[in-house]
Image (cartoon, rainbow, N blue to C red; front, top):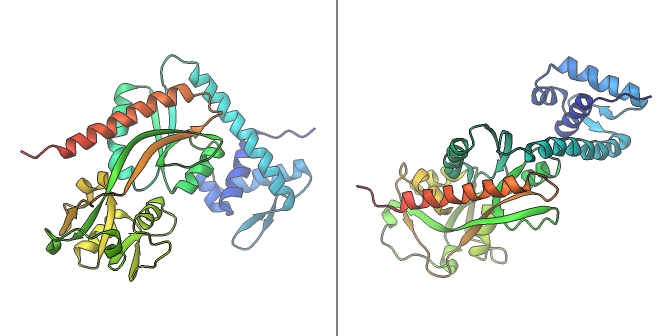
Length: 306
């Protein structure tokens, strides 16, 4: 009889994800030799190899690939058992794993976390900041409970709740203050700074500028909105940022901010979670807190300074 443990399955999943014993061990907060021993014992119980060992990286064998898909389903079901128990409680307690995309996290998270912890004293919030594609994968694997992203994501297995809509603004060097705001045709001829490939905000900005069919004169990539704004302040080009980022990113740079004429570029921000998650009712409550936090933050920034 094969006696597999949940611990072994989680170690297997970590090694399959990272493809490296050291990184997997760090993620599991155990030593590398201990992880290696657990994986070896797992393979011995199964009677076949799960990984092909290389000098710097490991790869799943064909059996490991099939085994991994079953393990993912098992661990997801185990996590949902915990969620089921949490959903049966009268109040929100325990760990809440929230994923957030990078163009939202620095600006909205402090307010959201503060509001949630104040309203739900027993809540232990874990935050994961990464790209939408990775958040979708982690939701599917049960590694996070919910995510705050730009909608739509159009995944049949996920619930989408729209929270608010915000506009994009144009950031230009300070010397351009008061100049006419360029339309999308003019913008395509300018040196436009955008986030690097993989960010949904990049795709939204390109769509507004209609740059899928027409290449800009010059297009430069940055790793964060902060980097883009500082580059604009140095006179390198212009960029678009979401409205929520203005108060944080622009004060430290010599830039001017302008709103576009209609049709104005915008995005819809929302929360997503697995339809099978038994905590759906609680997550809906949390989405209302997130919505209220975002509205309060917008009103705060809109008020004139004394």
